[in-house]
Length: 77
Image 1 (cartoon, rainbow, N blue to C red):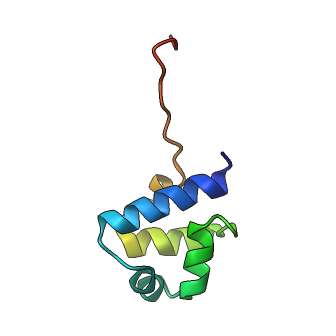
Image 2: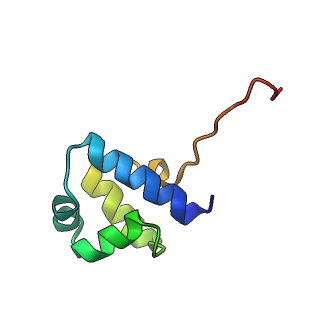
Image 3: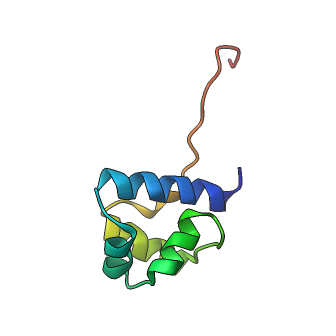
């Protein structure tokens, strides 16, 4: 999974946790709804500046949006 997909998943999850629509997020971040949707679908890569604006609008750290979650199997040591 590339970083664009990781951000898409984390962004959508964070937005849902905050019970925020794409429209509300776009408004708070000063972005278009179409652009927010494209980021959530991993159709486009967001710049670092946009990442920061989205994180601020969501009230999360920018690193939370690009952090890969790892699933540890029982065979890993």
